[in-house]
Structures are given as C-alpha cells and as structure tokens.
Length: 147
Image 1: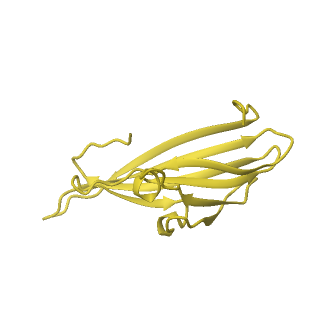
Image 2: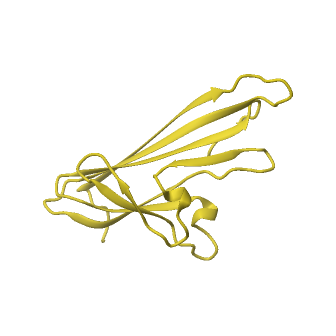
Image 3: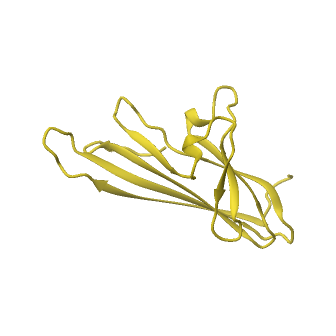
C-alpha cells in the first residue's frame, strides 16, 4: 500500500467497569475490573478487502503486585498455542474471523507480550466489529492503569 487508504476507516473504543468484592475475614479485599476494547473497521471500497490483519494487545498481569488478567474475548484465544489460528464468530456484515497470537519477532510479540491479531475479509460497503474483553483482578487498595 502506498499511503493512507481513506476508504477504510477504523474506530477503537474502550470501556471498563470495576466491582469491589465484599470484605471478608482473613482475606485481603480485591477488585475486578472488566475491560472491553471494540475495533470497528468499515470498508467503503466497491470491492471486498480480504486478508485484513488488525493487531491489538491485552495487558499482562503482575505476580509481584498480585494482579491477574483473564482474557474473555476473543473466544478461544486464551487456549490457543503459538502459531494456531482460532475461528471466532462475529455479529454484523462479517460473520467470522480468525484470531491468533502475533508472531514473535526478535523476542518481542506473541502471547508473552499480550499481542494478538485478527484476520478477516470485509465485503464492499461492510463493517467488521472485533471485540476484546478481559478481567483484571487486583488487591482492593492498589491503583493501576494500562499503558
């Protein structure tokens, strides 16, 4: 491709909600934040765009700070092995896409860095909605952010 393709538009929307678990005897209070990331790609071309790759990341946990991350969506990605593609059903114009952990390049990328890729085709005038969701469980008094 030579430059920006103005006939493809990409929007990326994130949201989160936090639930504080009730205080229990002999247990540190915790909170769980559910994060969602929705990427929408619209194809304004008069032809299908095939083999489109959309990259995204999921944050990593931190054992020292007792932060755990559980990947919920894309379905099946958490169980996928490096190099394995998983077919995911989608709503809307694009009914399914493949998702995989990104290829490791020079020791960076892939599951160990939380990097994954969607691969799909989008029909002329169509849209693909790619949903990511994960839970972050952390001690109740710990303030954290995703960078």
